Length: 350
Image (cartoon, rainbow, N blue to C red; front, side, top):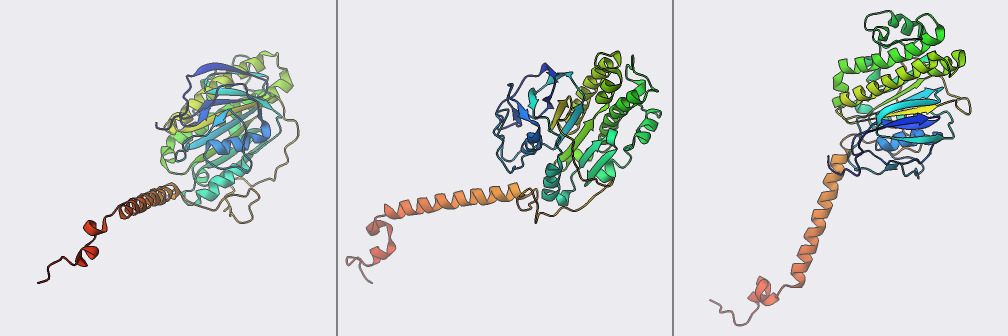
């Protein structure tokens, strides 16, 4: 693609402690290789910038460089994994340490997506299976209406056809223990999301960007019940690393290699997250006036087209004025102007 700033060869990386790992990203979203720490409270701004949106305060972080003005990813998928002390994620684009791991949400990014592309009804999905928290906007209401939401629904899904229990090497994990089932339920949700996206491939071909935010706490519960040195925790960590790798590859492929997939690993959040509750399958219209995020005025996908038309028309008119002015300045009135020629006394009158 044009305007490529920097392209990375994939490499294997291990995330130890709190960190941000970019599993997949298109070439024009330029993540720089380095150990620059990123603050947890800046993650929503980072997601917004990768999607081509403006933020209230400039993100002075060298890990992400500016990309092309008229290219944006078709989707951004952020997976937050809680209770992780070390997670090996092979073939990632880049990884960075995470400092100040405070709780965060992508509500501001979701509002921006919905306000700017309300006519195109983009997919906005925010899901935390362990807390049975689900928030959907746009086309997500129709696509993910069959997605199991409550823990009871997800555990029932584990006993149905297409369950991950038939394909995963459980090893020390049990199908009857509550903590093990919570972890396996989250893995099942990841599997079902990609399955539903494969069934609705048209979502990846529209003009509106999609946003996915998933929070997984199964490893945190396994660590609390069995301990980090237990075989259950080690087996679950290996399974989750493999599942996240495949999940990122599947989503990236479904969106035509034009999606950003990030994983945030955090041992524990420093402060509890206070969040206004929302009803399941809620879909509301978000208006721009009075927005606390100081969002710009609404525009649709044709903004880039109109901008290019106005820009190049202004440039063409400016060049035309310069050319006309230059020729008038260097014009010889006696030879180039019919007015002065007709006033010449030597012209013979008939």
